[in-house]
Length: 184
Picture 1 (spheres, one colour):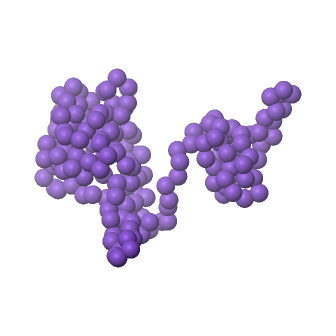
Picture 2 (cartoon, one colour):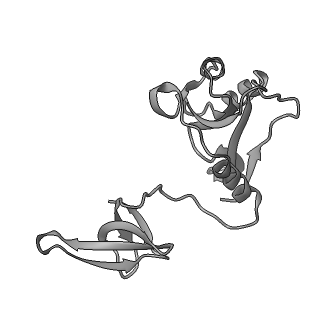
Protein backbone atom coordinates (compact mmCIF):
# COMPACT_ATOMS: atom_id res chain seq x y z
CA UNK A 1 0.00 0.00 0.00
CA UNK A 2 1.52 3.28 -1.04
CA UNK A 3 -0.75 5.57 0.97
CA UNK A 4 -4.30 5.93 2.10
CA UNK A 5 -6.97 8.61 2.06
CA UNK A 6 -10.62 9.22 2.71
CA UNK A 7 -13.08 10.40 0.09
CA UNK A 8 -14.23 13.70 1.51
CA UNK A 9 -17.73 15.07 1.30
CA UNK A 10 -18.53 18.67 0.39
CA UNK A 11 -19.36 21.04 3.24
CA UNK A 12 -22.91 21.42 1.85
CA UNK A 13 -24.05 18.01 3.10
CA UNK A 14 -26.85 18.40 5.63
CA UNK A 15 -28.16 15.50 7.73
CA UNK A 16 -31.45 14.07 6.45
CA UNK A 17 -33.28 14.15 9.73
CA UNK A 18 -32.26 16.82 12.21
CA UNK A 19 -34.90 15.66 14.68
CA UNK A 20 -33.59 12.12 15.24
CA UNK A 21 -30.20 10.83 16.28
CA UNK A 22 -28.16 9.81 13.27
CA UNK A 23 -26.35 6.47 13.18
CA UNK A 24 -23.79 5.00 10.82
CA UNK A 25 -24.92 2.09 8.66
CA UNK A 26 -23.05 -0.02 6.11
CA UNK A 27 -24.51 -0.13 2.63
CA UNK A 28 -23.78 -3.17 0.48
CA UNK A 29 -23.10 -1.96 -3.07
CA UNK A 30 -22.56 -3.48 -6.47
CA UNK A 31 -18.87 -4.13 -7.21
CA UNK A 32 -16.98 -1.01 -8.35
CA UNK A 33 -19.95 1.29 -7.61
CA UNK A 34 -18.70 2.63 -4.27
CA UNK A 35 -17.64 6.08 -5.55
CA UNK A 36 -20.83 6.51 -7.60
CA UNK A 37 -22.96 5.55 -4.60
CA UNK A 38 -21.00 7.99 -2.41
CA UNK A 39 -21.60 10.84 -4.85
CA UNK A 40 -25.32 9.98 -5.11
CA UNK A 41 -25.63 9.97 -1.31
CA UNK A 42 -24.05 13.42 -1.13
CA UNK A 43 -26.52 14.68 -3.75
CA UNK A 44 -29.39 13.35 -1.62
CA UNK A 45 -28.11 15.06 1.52
CA UNK A 46 -26.83 11.90 3.19
CA UNK A 47 -23.44 11.97 4.93
CA UNK A 48 -21.32 9.19 3.39
CA UNK A 49 -17.99 7.71 4.42
CA UNK A 50 -15.93 5.84 1.86
CA UNK A 51 -12.51 4.92 3.25
CA UNK A 52 -10.04 4.51 0.40
CA UNK A 53 -6.46 3.42 -0.10
CA UNK A 54 -4.05 4.39 -2.86
CA UNK A 55 -2.19 1.56 -4.51
CA UNK A 56 0.34 1.62 -7.31
CA UNK A 57 -0.71 -0.71 -10.11
CA UNK A 58 1.91 -1.79 -12.62
CA UNK A 59 1.28 -2.74 -16.20
CA UNK A 60 3.86 -3.77 -18.76
CA UNK A 61 4.10 -0.21 -20.13
CA UNK A 62 3.30 2.03 -17.12
CA UNK A 63 2.61 2.52 -13.43
CA UNK A 64 -0.43 4.33 -12.09
CA UNK A 65 -1.68 5.28 -8.62
CA UNK A 66 -5.22 4.01 -8.19
CA UNK A 67 -7.57 5.00 -5.38
CA UNK A 68 -9.56 1.95 -4.25
CA UNK A 69 -12.20 1.40 -1.54
CA UNK A 70 -10.71 -0.05 1.63
CA UNK A 71 -13.76 -2.30 2.03
CA UNK A 72 -14.78 -3.44 -1.44
CA UNK A 73 -18.56 -3.31 -2.06
CA UNK A 74 -19.30 -1.24 1.09
CA UNK A 75 -20.04 2.43 1.75
CA UNK A 76 -21.00 3.84 5.14
CA UNK A 77 -23.89 6.30 5.49
CA UNK A 78 -25.08 8.33 8.45
CA UNK A 79 -28.85 8.40 8.69
CA UNK A 80 -31.77 8.34 11.09
CA UNK A 81 -33.17 4.91 12.00
CA UNK A 82 -36.50 5.45 10.25
CA UNK A 83 -38.20 4.02 7.18
CA UNK A 84 -38.02 7.16 5.02
CA UNK A 85 -34.25 7.56 5.47
CA UNK A 86 -33.66 3.86 4.77
CA UNK A 87 -35.74 4.09 1.59
CA UNK A 88 -33.85 7.21 0.51
CA UNK A 89 -30.54 5.34 0.53
CA UNK A 90 -31.96 2.07 -0.79
CA UNK A 91 -33.20 3.91 -3.91
CA UNK A 92 -29.68 5.01 -4.81
CA UNK A 93 -28.46 3.22 -7.93
CA UNK A 94 -25.83 0.61 -7.09
CA UNK A 95 -27.00 0.05 -3.50
CA UNK A 96 -27.99 -3.58 -2.91
CA UNK A 97 -29.12 -3.15 0.69
CA UNK A 98 -28.35 -2.19 4.24
CA UNK A 99 -26.10 -4.56 6.15
CA UNK A 100 -28.00 -6.07 9.05
CA UNK A 101 -31.13 -7.99 9.91
CA UNK A 102 -34.50 -7.73 8.19
CA UNK A 103 -33.20 -5.16 5.68
CA UNK A 104 -33.26 -2.46 8.35
CA UNK A 105 -29.52 -2.36 8.90
CA UNK A 106 -27.54 -2.62 12.09
CA UNK A 107 -26.16 0.66 13.50
CA UNK A 108 -22.37 0.88 13.61
CA UNK A 109 -20.94 2.59 16.71
CA UNK A 110 -19.37 5.99 16.01
CA UNK A 111 -16.21 4.76 17.74
CA UNK A 112 -15.64 2.12 15.05
CA UNK A 113 -16.00 4.65 12.21
CA UNK A 114 -13.78 7.10 14.12
CA UNK A 115 -11.16 4.37 14.59
CA UNK A 116 -11.06 3.66 10.83
CA UNK A 117 -10.76 7.40 10.10
CA UNK A 118 -7.95 7.81 12.67
CA UNK A 119 -6.05 4.84 11.28
CA UNK A 120 -6.27 6.13 7.71
CA UNK A 121 -5.36 9.71 8.66
CA UNK A 122 -2.51 8.71 10.98
CA UNK A 123 1.09 8.03 10.09
CA UNK A 124 0.97 4.58 11.67
CA UNK A 125 1.71 1.61 9.39
CA UNK A 126 -1.22 -0.80 9.08
CA UNK A 127 -2.42 -3.59 6.85
CA UNK A 128 -5.75 -5.29 6.27
CA UNK A 129 -6.26 -8.62 7.99
CA UNK A 130 -8.99 -11.24 8.02
CA UNK A 131 -11.83 -10.72 10.49
CA UNK A 132 -11.46 -13.27 13.28
CA UNK A 133 -13.73 -13.66 16.28
CA UNK A 134 -12.74 -14.88 19.70
CA UNK A 135 -13.95 -18.48 19.89
CA UNK A 136 -13.38 -19.10 16.17
CA UNK A 137 -11.32 -22.07 14.95
CA UNK A 138 -8.08 -20.75 13.40
CA UNK A 139 -4.86 -21.99 11.80
CA UNK A 140 -1.38 -20.48 12.24
CA UNK A 141 0.38 -19.44 9.03
CA UNK A 142 4.16 -19.43 9.10
CA UNK A 143 6.77 -19.67 11.81
CA UNK A 144 7.40 -22.48 14.27
CA UNK A 145 3.64 -23.04 14.72
CA UNK A 146 2.85 -23.37 10.97
CA UNK A 147 -0.35 -25.34 10.38
CA UNK A 148 -1.32 -25.56 14.05
CA UNK A 149 -5.10 -25.34 14.50
CA UNK A 150 -7.14 -24.46 17.54
CA UNK A 151 -9.65 -22.04 19.04
CA UNK A 152 -8.72 -18.36 19.30
CA UNK A 153 -9.29 -16.98 22.80
CA UNK A 154 -8.41 -13.77 24.59
CA UNK A 155 -6.74 -13.89 28.01
CA UNK A 156 -5.76 -10.67 29.75
CA UNK A 157 -5.78 -8.92 26.37
CA UNK A 158 -3.48 -11.48 24.73
CA UNK A 159 -4.56 -13.68 21.86
CA UNK A 160 -4.09 -17.31 22.65
CA UNK A 161 -4.58 -20.47 20.62
CA UNK A 162 -6.17 -23.32 22.55
CA UNK A 163 -5.44 -26.83 21.29
CA UNK A 164 -7.72 -29.51 22.68
CA UNK A 165 -7.68 -33.28 22.81
CA UNK A 166 -11.41 -33.93 22.93
CA UNK A 167 -11.19 -37.61 23.87
CA UNK A 168 -9.41 -36.91 27.15
CA UNK A 169 -10.92 -33.44 27.67
CA UNK A 170 -7.57 -31.71 28.07
CA UNK A 171 -6.26 -28.55 26.43
CA UNK A 172 -3.04 -26.62 25.95
CA UNK A 173 -2.77 -22.87 25.34
CA UNK A 174 -0.08 -20.99 23.38
CA UNK A 175 0.17 -17.24 22.78
CA UNK A 176 -0.08 -16.38 19.10
CA UNK A 177 0.85 -12.68 19.32
CA UNK A 178 3.07 -11.93 16.33
CA UNK A 179 1.90 -14.97 14.35
CA UNK A 180 -0.35 -14.66 11.36
CA UNK A 181 -3.57 -16.63 11.84
CA UNK A 182 -6.41 -17.39 9.45
CA UNK A 183 -9.81 -19.01 9.73
CA UNK A 184 -9.50 -22.79 9.61
